[in-house]
Length: 297
Image (cartoon, rainbow, N blue to C red; front, top):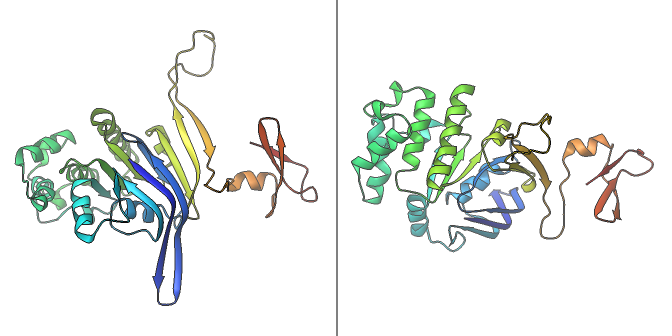
């Protein structure tokens, strides 16, 4: 569904250049439910804007659902945004038109595409559990209800990819869980590819894969492994159906590796590491003068 290779984004203002992405690599499979995490300024929202066709890359490769976003004309990008992707933003002012009802808001993307289907708008509001609120306007809906209407709007034109930028950032923990459960249901029931940018580390429990971005590059991945029943160890402390997680560091195309900062701090690394190859593993060590503590990967 998504292929990013050595993706670069540079913003220019007068004589100042800001590099938001610097050689990011990422692949997302069709039907995958994944999250993107990272500190403020790491480049995750920039990536989401480019995936949605709202911003153009500066260099590298970017394709979504077979479309080369480098080559699309302005008019083709408009069609891409209408037909291929759906958006859910943290700020509901970007999601909803306040003077329209929930039903009219869901119909709006269809009208822009020239295919108004009131019956489908009803179905989508029922899908997100808000069929009874179809006549209510923005001011009459809670924050969680507004986000669920926003999800219905994003689904209006049957997109191949759903993008969500901090969709739980402005709601309480209980409502956030409901919203994330809804994304999970859309992914499982309809095979919809969903990419969620978030600060919420609890997201790892709801998605198949979490990709961490640091300094404009993919730094690590967290894969969720479904637990399987193990009859050989009835006394195991781990539930048979429990999920496990495996963290993977990511190598870029020239073999560069980003090591999590907490790992480097643990061995008191300061700018340089010794590297050794030992059978089937690579061993990274702090310089001898700094510490005798080693770390293996």
